[in-house]
Amino acid sequence: MSQAEPRLVPPDLEEAPTPLPVIEEFEEAGPLVGILIGSESDREAMEPAIDELNDRGISNELRILSAHRDPRGVAEYASTAALRGVRVIIAGAGMAAALPGVVAAYTELPVIGVPLISSKTVAGGLDAILSIVQMPPGVPVACVSVNGSRNAAILAARILGLGGGYPGTPGRPTLQL
Ligand code: AIR
View (tube, rainbow, N blue to C red):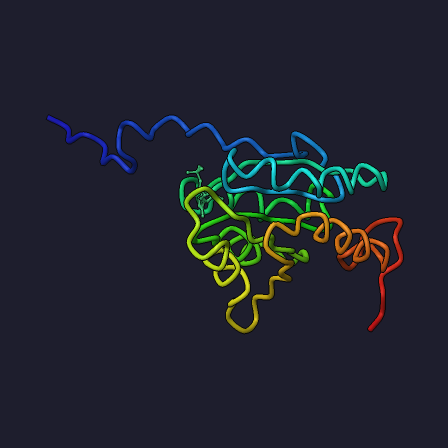
Protein backbone atom coordinates (compact mmCIF):
# COMPACT_ATOMS: atom_id res chain seq x y z
CA MET A 1 0.00 0.00 0.00
CA SER A 2 1.48 3.33 -1.09
CA GLN A 3 1.94 5.98 1.51
CA ALA A 4 -0.19 9.08 1.28
CA GLU A 5 1.49 12.20 -0.11
CA PRO A 6 2.76 14.37 2.71
CA ARG A 7 0.46 17.32 3.27
CA LEU A 8 2.23 20.63 3.00
CA VAL A 9 -0.62 22.77 4.26
CA PRO A 10 -3.42 22.06 6.67
CA PRO A 11 -6.59 20.98 4.84
CA ASP A 12 -8.48 24.13 5.67
CA LEU A 13 -5.79 26.25 3.99
CA GLU A 14 -5.56 24.26 0.77
CA GLU A 15 -7.69 26.81 -0.99
CA ALA A 16 -5.98 30.15 -1.17
CA PRO A 17 -7.45 32.51 1.40
CA THR A 18 -9.38 35.44 0.01
CA PRO A 19 -6.98 38.39 -0.12
CA LEU A 20 -7.80 41.35 2.06
CA PRO A 21 -9.49 44.11 0.09
CA VAL A 22 -7.21 46.99 -0.87
CA ILE A 23 -8.56 50.27 0.37
CA GLU A 24 -8.25 52.35 -2.75
CA GLU A 25 -9.81 55.48 -1.42
CA PHE A 26 -11.26 56.65 1.82
CA GLU A 27 -14.99 56.44 2.08
CA GLU A 28 -15.30 60.12 2.70
CA ALA A 29 -12.95 63.02 1.96
CA GLY A 30 -12.50 65.03 5.10
CA PRO A 31 -13.03 68.71 5.81
CA LEU A 32 -10.22 71.05 6.88
CA VAL A 33 -11.08 70.86 10.57
CA GLY A 34 -12.09 67.78 12.51
CA ILE A 35 -13.95 68.45 15.74
CA LEU A 36 -14.13 65.65 18.28
CA ILE A 37 -16.04 65.49 21.54
CA GLY A 38 -15.94 62.77 24.16
CA SER A 39 -19.69 62.56 24.63
CA GLU A 40 -23.01 63.75 23.25
CA SER A 41 -23.24 65.72 26.50
CA ASP A 42 -20.34 67.90 25.26
CA ARG A 43 -22.10 69.01 22.09
CA GLU A 44 -23.52 72.29 23.38
CA ALA A 45 -20.15 73.45 24.68
CA MET A 46 -18.55 72.81 21.30
CA GLU A 47 -21.20 74.59 19.25
CA PRO A 48 -19.42 78.00 19.35
CA ALA A 49 -16.48 76.36 17.54
CA ILE A 50 -18.74 75.01 14.82
CA ASP A 51 -20.47 78.39 14.44
CA GLU A 52 -17.13 80.19 14.24
CA LEU A 53 -15.77 77.86 11.57
CA ASN A 54 -19.02 78.02 9.60
CA ASP A 55 -19.00 81.83 9.77
CA ARG A 56 -15.50 81.78 8.32
CA GLY A 57 -16.43 79.29 5.61
CA ILE A 58 -14.07 76.64 6.95
CA SER A 59 -15.27 73.10 6.34
CA ASN A 60 -15.60 70.99 9.46
CA GLU A 61 -17.08 67.81 10.85
CA LEU A 62 -18.15 66.81 14.34
CA ARG A 63 -17.56 63.30 15.66
CA ILE A 64 -18.41 61.91 19.08
CA LEU A 65 -15.50 59.68 20.07
CA SER A 66 -14.48 58.87 23.61
CA ALA A 67 -10.85 58.08 24.36
CA HIS A 68 -11.99 55.74 27.13
CA ARG A 69 -15.20 54.26 25.77
CA ASP A 70 -14.09 53.90 22.15
CA PRO A 71 -10.29 54.05 22.02
CA ARG A 72 -10.14 52.12 18.74
CA GLY A 73 -12.49 54.59 17.11
CA VAL A 74 -10.31 57.47 18.27
CA ALA A 75 -7.18 55.73 16.97
CA GLU A 76 -8.79 55.10 13.60
CA TYR A 77 -10.07 58.64 13.23
CA ALA A 78 -6.81 60.27 14.29
CA SER A 79 -4.54 58.04 12.24
CA THR A 80 -6.50 58.57 9.01
CA ALA A 81 -7.50 62.22 9.41
CA ALA A 82 -4.52 63.72 7.55
CA LEU A 83 -5.00 61.29 4.67
CA ARG A 84 -8.63 62.41 4.38
CA GLY A 85 -7.55 66.04 4.09
CA VAL A 86 -8.15 67.18 7.65
CA ARG A 87 -5.55 69.79 8.60
CA VAL A 88 -6.35 70.72 12.21
CA ILE A 89 -8.13 68.76 14.92
CA ILE A 90 -10.07 70.34 17.75
CA ALA A 91 -10.82 67.87 20.54
CA GLY A 92 -12.95 68.66 23.57
CA ALA A 93 -13.73 66.51 26.57
CA GLY A 94 -14.54 66.80 30.24
CA MET A 95 -13.44 64.94 33.36
CA ALA A 96 -10.30 62.83 32.66
CA ALA A 97 -10.05 64.46 29.25
CA ALA A 98 -7.60 62.16 27.49
CA LEU A 99 -9.11 62.73 24.04
CA PRO A 100 -6.84 65.52 22.71
CA GLY A 101 -3.71 63.77 23.96
CA VAL A 102 -4.65 60.41 22.50
CA VAL A 103 -5.48 62.06 19.18
CA ALA A 104 -2.07 63.79 19.22
CA ALA A 105 -0.44 60.41 19.81
CA TYR A 106 -1.85 59.14 16.51
CA THR A 107 -1.37 62.13 14.21
CA GLU A 108 1.12 64.87 13.40
CA LEU A 109 -1.68 67.29 12.67
CA PRO A 110 -1.95 70.19 15.10
CA VAL A 111 -4.36 69.30 17.90
CA ILE A 112 -6.20 71.93 19.92
CA GLY A 113 -7.69 70.69 23.17
CA VAL A 114 -10.78 72.22 24.73
CA PRO A 115 -11.30 71.39 28.41
CA LEU A 116 -15.03 71.13 29.00
CA ILE A 117 -17.15 71.44 32.10
CA SER A 118 -19.16 68.24 32.34
CA SER A 119 -22.05 67.70 34.71
CA LYS A 120 -19.71 65.47 36.75
CA THR A 121 -16.75 67.84 36.78
CA VAL A 122 -14.69 68.52 39.85
CA ALA A 123 -13.29 72.00 40.45
CA GLY A 124 -15.16 73.58 37.55
CA GLY A 125 -13.18 72.01 34.75
CA LEU A 126 -9.79 71.91 36.43
CA ASP A 127 -9.92 68.12 36.02
CA ALA A 128 -10.19 68.46 32.25
CA ILE A 129 -7.71 71.32 31.82
CA LEU A 130 -4.97 69.45 33.68
CA SER A 131 -5.70 66.28 31.71
CA ILE A 132 -5.28 68.17 28.46
CA VAL A 133 -2.49 70.60 29.20
CA GLN A 134 -0.03 68.31 30.99
CA MET A 135 1.17 66.44 27.93
CA PRO A 136 4.55 64.72 28.05
CA PRO A 137 7.43 66.24 26.03
CA GLY A 138 7.28 65.38 22.34
CA VAL A 139 3.50 65.11 22.05
CA PRO A 140 2.15 68.65 22.03
CA VAL A 141 -1.48 69.65 22.44
CA ALA A 142 -2.49 73.31 22.33
CA CYS A 143 -5.00 74.05 25.07
CA VAL A 144 -7.58 76.83 25.20
CA SER A 145 -9.56 77.94 28.21
CA VAL A 146 -12.26 75.89 29.92
CA ASN A 147 -15.23 75.80 27.52
CA GLY A 148 -13.15 77.96 25.16
CA SER A 149 -14.31 76.24 22.00
CA ARG A 150 -14.71 79.48 20.01
CA ASN A 151 -11.06 80.32 20.64
CA ALA A 152 -10.12 76.85 19.47
CA ALA A 153 -11.85 77.56 16.16
CA ILE A 154 -10.14 80.93 15.79
CA LEU A 155 -6.78 79.31 16.49
CA ALA A 156 -7.53 76.59 13.94
CA ALA A 157 -8.35 79.29 11.38
CA ARG A 158 -5.03 81.01 12.09
CA ILE A 159 -3.09 77.75 11.72
CA LEU A 160 -4.85 77.12 8.41
CA GLY A 161 -4.10 80.69 7.33
CA LEU A 162 -0.38 80.11 7.84
CA GLY A 163 -0.24 77.44 5.21
CA GLY A 164 -2.50 74.54 5.78
CA GLY A 165 -1.43 73.29 9.16
CA TYR A 166 0.51 70.41 7.68
CA PRO A 167 3.49 70.17 5.34
CA GLY A 168 2.66 69.30 1.79
CA THR A 169 -0.96 70.35 1.79
CA PRO A 170 -1.89 70.32 -1.90
CA GLY A 171 -2.63 73.76 -3.23
CA ARG A 172 -1.53 75.52 -0.10
CA PRO A 173 1.88 77.07 0.57
CA THR A 174 3.83 75.52 3.41
CA LEU A 175 5.35 77.90 5.91
CA GLN A 176 9.13 77.46 6.06
CA LEU A 177 10.32 78.11 9.63
N1 AIR B 1 -15.43 61.58 28.71
C1 AIR B 1 -16.01 60.61 27.98
N2 AIR B 1 -15.10 59.67 27.75
C2 AIR B 1 -13.95 60.03 28.28
C3 AIR B 1 -14.16 61.25 28.91
N3 AIR B 1 -13.26 61.96 29.58
C4 AIR B 1 -16.06 62.80 29.22
C5 AIR B 1 -16.95 63.48 28.22
C6 AIR B 1 -17.91 64.24 29.10
C7 AIR B 1 -17.85 63.52 30.43
O1 AIR B 1 -16.88 62.50 30.30
O2 AIR B 1 -16.17 64.29 27.37
O3 AIR B 1 -17.50 65.59 29.29
C8 AIR B 1 -19.17 62.90 30.83
O4 AIR B 1 -19.64 62.09 29.77
P1 AIR B 1 -21.13 61.48 29.81
O5 AIR B 1 -21.26 60.74 28.48
O6 AIR B 1 -21.22 60.58 30.98
O7 AIR B 1 -22.06 62.66 29.87
